[in-house]
Length: 409
Image (cartoon, rainbow, N blue to C red; front, top):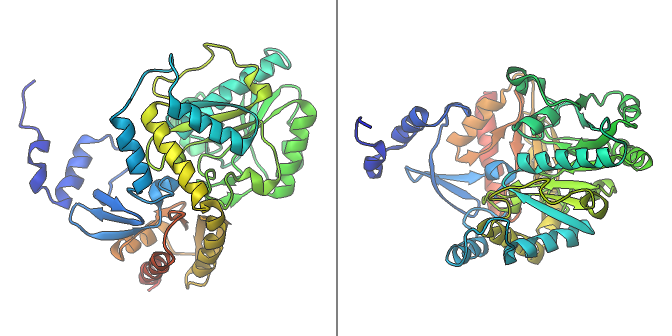
């Protein structure tokens, strides 16, 4: 092929503006213009290619819950990279087994399927639900109920489960049997759980919809109705799981026992990994060859996940997320320009006053040295690392206040 010399040959002298332009020219524009190019991170700090420091209140969308370059995770990845990277799932590996055992200890008797992302974890759950439905009602029992405004991923099955029509319209038709129902009439939702329903799939906190917790009584009634009708209760813990809400899994707050739990994000602290836990009854319906993932549960990812789970337990980070998260929510609520604060633990949605745009606040916060993310037109996502030092947290709130104040004025 002919053409100019590759741009990466002169990377050493590239400025921040150069990187932004090169990003726009070479990466498919599904994310819009990206205003910063980061070079490194340390704990709760990020540094762009110009060396500018930012406090990270986003954690890569609730992923880096131990902060950046955590030494235990880095050592685990480095050691595994020098030992064994890949065998395929035709063979077992030690890190995969150890992580599965730890997740079973947290969630209960069952089995774990490993994948590469939250969307893939939910795709697996959808397939497992269909297998369950066929075994407990025949081929017509394949319907799955989800909540309006819920978000379960961008792949076609996970997208079909997502209750946000604006994300679907260009890719219709969706997978048959997926029904996203409004929650303003709980009885109507409950009445849909019946003989043709294989599963109910819920985010207990609809994070991408603005950090909207579901009503506890409603969720418990869904769990009862599912148990009465042999319908699977599946909980999407991709964003809420692994300590983020002040418990290992958000289902603990609701007093329910799901049949299926999906997770990803914080499980690898930045290393791509997803997992789908199923109870023993569901596991009994899954046959050899029913599902697979070439890179799912590969040693590098599971070594990182094992380190994450060890640090979370050793340092009591789910409990710390509850305590520090309550303090952070109150600090944010006290700021001028904040209408309300939603969420649990350190999964927080900040609702702004009318007329204040979330994208403007996120941009102003960047200028103040803070990374947050817009959730909607008028709400901002705040998801710091669970081990962020209190002093850094307080400084981050001050930077948020400066950014918000500049938008108010």
